[in-house]
Image 1 (cartoon, one colour):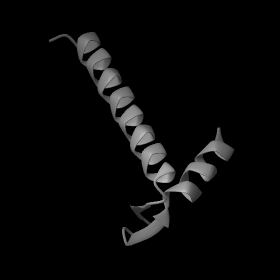
Image 2 (tube, helix red, strand yellow):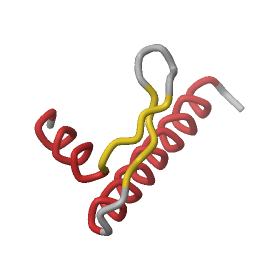
Image 3 (spheres, rainbow, N blue to C red):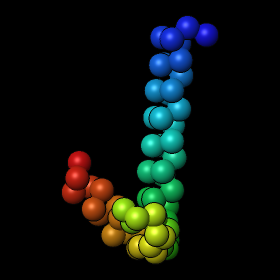
Image 4 (cartoon, rainbow, N blue to C red):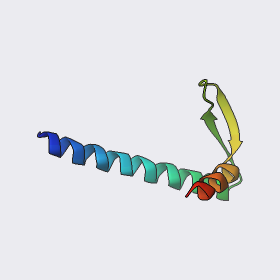
Length: 60
């Protein structure tokens, strides 16, 4: 596999992961569920998916 092919593959994987996360976040927000994320120190935090989605929309 050439370097260019690897770059294309990693780009596809990255886009797929971002899409999966977005879908999961929207589904959990619609159901009123929470997400578990980590803070800067790697400690788990439980946060409302709706809050995360709103924050993500503001950043766009």
